[in-house]
Length: 215
Image 1 (cartoon, one colour):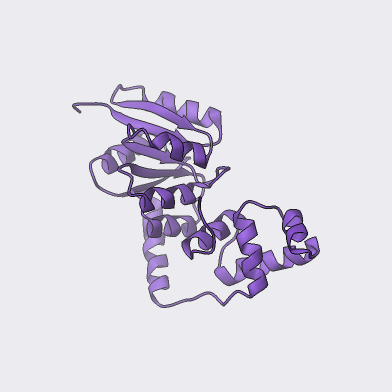
Image 2 (cartoon, rainbow, N blue to C red):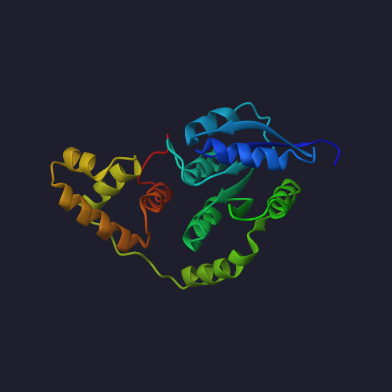
């Protein structure tokens, strides 16, 4: 390799970042030139244009990884994005594929696979964790069959917007002048209707469907 690959690691756990950095810099063909602990910091650091490949966690404060990914794609930033996550649920991968990723690797993978993924996407190809590929194909075929979510009520949309902004149920209840129990019921109904299992996925759905502003 003629020059080292410049990597940024975006993960809210400093020990994880340090561990990945040590693994990647072992052979000298990769340099970690930036570390970000949350989504907004990641976006700000990308402005210098020095990053070839971004290793991006999904669960982060101040914009989750998929919101960061969407921002990068909308702004057409010249950086390869490799999602590095604990989430093996296929829905996360499907969302990431829809927004536009170059690679998707699980955190329990070994260093050989991670380096292979980085090199693959650096050279312009896509790399998906091998054991997730069949599940991805199956899910994409299901989606093409036209399975649509039930319509959300006006109140559910209000709750989803606030949830996507990072508010807790108690805060949403205060903002909408309803009980916390009612908010909890709304959240449960929202999850069922849009077929997600947690708040991060719900926020991604809201962003993807233009229900909330990313910045």
